[in-house]
Image (cartoon, rainbow, N blue to C red):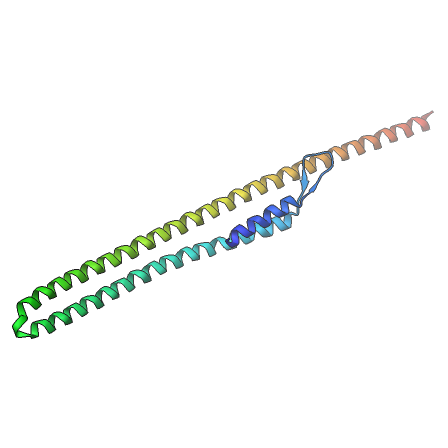
Amino acid sequence: MTNTDILLEDLEDVLDDATSVPMTKKSLVDVEKIKTIIEDIRLNTPQETKQAKAIVDSRNSIIDEANKEKEEIIAQAQAQARELIAKDQITQTAQAEAADIIAKAHEEGRAYIQDAKNQASEILSDATTKANEMLTNAQNKSREMLTAVNTYADDTLLAIDDALYKALSDVRRIRQGLSNKHGE
């Protein structure tokens, strides 16, 4: 489980722990906690990218190692070929075997490199897909939470406005009543 997944779970926990506003479908959330978690998600996203880069570096290392192994196999094959040629009675056989060994070494080297490239490409593709999915999920969750917070704030301000309007109406009515009593 990645740090981003853990942070998304923390975000869900904050929403699950939200206090319900009586007689509404609204809930009170800790906006600071949500903002902190969103910021942590933003900070962790580069970490996922670093992991993908490490996979690419690992791929390059595998390819380099395969190239070195290929060169060693070729060098060994050439050394064996020189030894065979040095023996007069089997010079022609040695040349044929040397050519065969070198061809096999080249073929094995190419196969190692191709396998390494295929593995590295697959790993990089999987890592990129997962990183993109995690980023998309984090962005979607952030948008959902921001929408919920904005809706809650709008509803709360509307309720406060209604309460102030009613209170002001009561004060005016009371003042009118007092004015009417003093005018009598």
